[in-house]
Image (cartoon, rainbow, N blue to C red; front, side, top):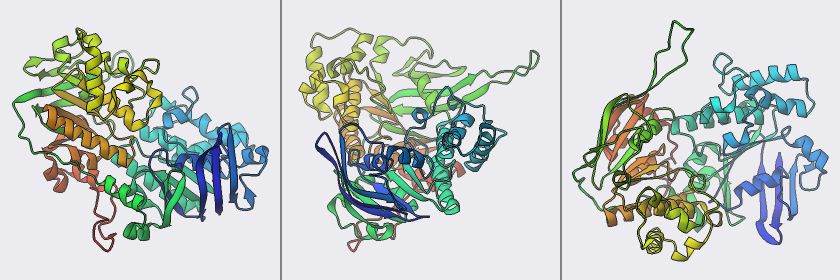
Length: 535
């Protein structure tokens, strides 16, 4: 259906893609994997002819008999959305926040002149039903901010398949989703490929995802396809060293020195958080929604505790309460013996003991400040030390960066380097507890392995305690001593990480583990070193 031959691209003379050649057949799932910067997304944009200024392209990419690289802009515009659809990584930025989901799905049909507005809305309704958003719960009048991350991604899929394209490009469609939602989205995509007989190009850095989805697979490094073939054959043999490196990084577990948890540092006792809901009329007020229901646990000094669960289970609400940003309707939270007055300003001496690393470091930084200012930012909550420049330099060194990086801006760094800077900002206060909120979920596998090694080293060097919040069970297994499993505001299972993940007792934990993608154990090379399950 699509044939790419010797496709190369440079931007202002700098090579970005080099001699790419691959085919995608109708009804086939073609996986494209590699690290950030390897050229995966640029390959997709090249096929859509959405090229940046200064681009020079050679080679061919034919969709049927149409060469996408030489066709007129008018002809390519007729193909985009019609014969080629694309699902972007971040649905909230791909959707128009001031336009209803019905209008956004119908827009493709109207723009391509296939039907009038009334018929387009009826078709949009059918497509939303097909992707699991029924009319009773998800009317066309809903806006994107009223949906969860997985629901927004379903809207993006409905938009992409509105005109039944020949090729569907999915660029990291499940990166930020929890394992259950990820499994649902992947099942949906696979079902659409089988029913609609479209080709699917699945772009991801997660080898376990493509192992369960792709018929064929190509591995990209620095703009080149270094290895490709049938998925099972490629995993069994892994002829290229880079493919082996990616695989090893996928299952990487940092070396950690066994540490007995010290005395209690953070204690949560029967925490309750309720939210009011809109009532039905003046006489019948609605019962409050309970986001956190009598949750109790403790983190010892130097201990790493994991918190897992699906989106909406209450993890983030509980975390905000621990950080003193949410009030409680019941229970208590104490840090080093002092009670946190949730919803009130936390005293500086307590704030110094607990810091946080966010999921998106770029979004948590002021892009107008230099790195030195960003790393030193926590000091505005307490007295500024006289040796602040030295403290910044030490923090940067500890996370593997140079003191000179303090004079740069955040846009000058890669995603992994930005996360190191976020960790440096947390370290500079010399805390006892660091809360890591999905701190590695958006990173590719090799960078993620480096960050996990860094966290393990820092914990050993400083006796840090971690509250590690993640939907990735592989990461939780690699970095935590104990794990809590949260569902509908309650802790349904807890215990030693290896025990819980190897032999879960609660049905919900079993469901999470079953939803996590794995590379089949039988896909081994001759030496038996590859193919072990990643969960």
